[in-house]
Image 1 (cartoon, rainbow, N blue to C red):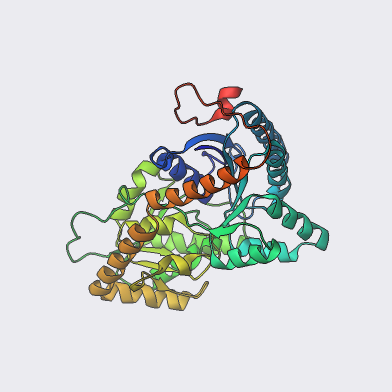
Image 2: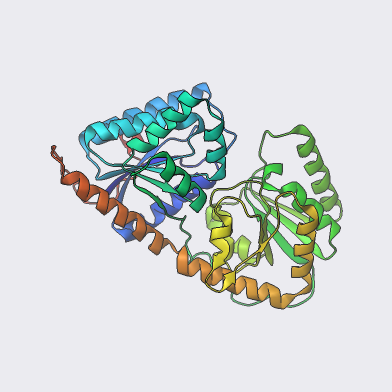
Length: 396
């Protein structure tokens, strides 16, 4: 199956770039040949507060030109477009239209959940209709949460809307071979963009208030946000550092992240808003007990056949966060129970092979429907049949 994959690659950090790498790593085993159209704004971060800037306009034009060449010269079976909408709606709408004119089905993959709903509802009526039209012109729309799935279904009645979760490599991310000997502080890990919006302020304060805990932060410090919250975060982290209870790991290379999870006792993501966080899936696959907030698709992620695989606390509820961390500190059996449930849930539902099979099945369905419609199909393939990554760079 020949797929043109549209989305950002590193150096920008964020959930979409992590998903792109996971997809590419697992594509060949799923029978997918992937051409990448890199949409990343060079050197800029990828997050829900991203704004339209001149460099993004230039990159959008380059990506659309690359897609146009790819559709004309290599004719993929499907184009898979990853997007958060927002400012990129116009760009991605043009990409969908290019695919429609070429007779190639386009999959629109929405990478956020409640943020998209709130943003769309706040738009003026003409803009809401334009976003609706973009979704309606896609051959299929993939969502990450049940809430967003139902919202999009209402926007595009009769459209192909489905929910497919993010994949995680459950072979690379796995529990430590041996449990840690008792004694010593409980090691709490946060992985992601270090900002107040991710709940790191509440987490730092909760760790300060509960004895017997240390905090490790894996990720870059995020820019922007309210100045007061950022100042309070700096103060809390500074106090933890003075007490010798803070490890700032910085932006950890992807290959080193499995070891970071195995070196922790608890994973905590008290975020104010998420889609489906890759870090939570990685922590669950690593067998860590997790403390999370019920935002985006998180409640669906942790709710397994045997009950919840994590402790839930309300966003910005520092007292509840302290209580959850204290209970995990004091109850090793609870940590073991939650960690085992998390690992089982990750393996059964989010393993890369299973999720890639869902993508492949969707592609096959859309490609078959497209082939049954009148119109020329260019069946040219790469001479060696190998996966084609980074076609943007090859064509320049």
